[in-house]
Length: 437
Image 1 (tube, rainbow, N blue to C red):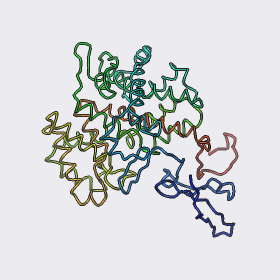
Image 2: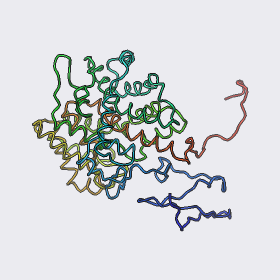
Image 3: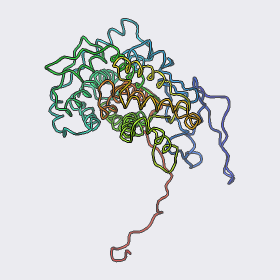
């Protein structure tokens, strides 16, 4: 962090002494006012529900400019990474700060590929779940359970342990997600295959059976790989902040990532693509494309309680750059599979057209977001809606690990401890039970 020559002066109307607050400039983005000494000098906290104006850390990993619709991983635009790199190259970049050379990519890919199997006892762990359990409930348990199998890499303060657990988590997440899926549909688990790509291997574990192998379609493999890249990291969102906060206590990496998985499950976060598809299916039940005007009318009515899922974003006030890339992939997948006449996809494309042209949505910048398109792509590939968030967790694991490692290496890091504005009862005395009203 570079301190600015300019300082912020905080003054009080009650005559309390004013104080100067340092201002730091990042490489790009807004300046940051350092309030760390505020409580010590004034006895006051700041109040910022949802952390809308608070930087909880300094980071070199991901940068978002919501107004411009810009997303950078380690300085590289997402558009370039999604079109010129694969997911494992992106993983290497997020973990190490630079894109790999040819040899580095080969070694990293080999390392990840040869750690994709999980302990055989994990399948017995799975049997404790009901068959109709949500995949995210299963995944939260499986990821946390990894720490019970890998005692040699649970010291968060040991750099070698962190490196080992990072490879294990990235390598094993596709295996765990596919195992959770196979368990819920009653099919045998499919072991990973070392001669396939990361995304191709995942799709084979998802869709192959012992009686019939699955040969991944390259268009669909590229689509899945792009989904992974676009979801790999996204700055200090709810789940990433959860991983950092959980890791700040010194807990093991598997537990910290499991906490991220649990946070991602929420419908306002990772569950958004699941909610978008459920919305489309609800509109289809109403009558499909013919009833879309009626649905849009309800969305515009504030009293209807009907929300447009998969549109707009908390950070992006412009078109989400990930959505532009996912839109291309979406149309490529639908063309390859000949699904443009499928009722749900026809409905999705009609809704997309309205959102991009209707003044109500354009004025409010409610553009289709990455969740909208990735949900459509995954449904087209054959992935059930209930598994969407688990695939998001799979992709985001590398970002969580990179953020966790960065926090641990930060000399200013300490256990997270947010403050509060207390509005409860003042101190009072306990009355004998017979004296209480």
